[in-house]
Image (cartoon, rainbow, N blue to C red; front, side, top):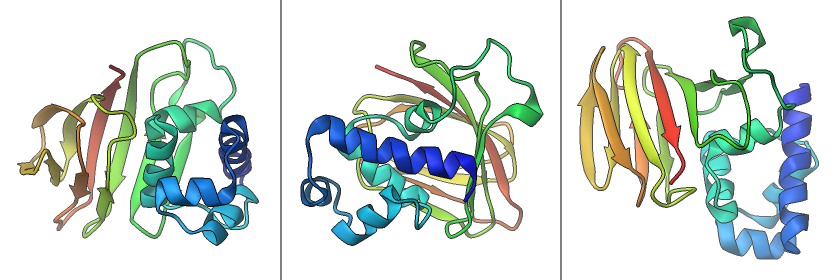
Length: 185
């Protein structure tokens, strides 16, 4: 297991312990089975983007914040080869933390890549009112927010606040690469 996955498993277990929740409590709050939660916290399986989205909703934090929390306190500058990359092979999603990690700042920049056909759905916002800017660098992506689907091509930028379910889908034929700017409310 890679070091980031080990730290992620430990952080998820710590978040649950900090709240005094049992695995059953977290299963009720997240809609994820108790056995899956247990395996994720023990590092036996790597969580998918969808599963992390459900856990982030239960813990009321954006996924980018959760992943930043498993990184060491960083410097002001993070060179490209040192940026944390997380991949969900099942869904076809790769996420690069572009911004130097720091929990005190409200904004973050994330690079996302979706392979053709990738379709990621988040049932609820991790942080209601979280502001997002999606700027497509290559390919195309469909973003559904607030019940409206927005087809985005290279150079297009969509801004919205998260209040309900969202979906990121790459219709292909090429992979979609985009920057996501997250601003805490």
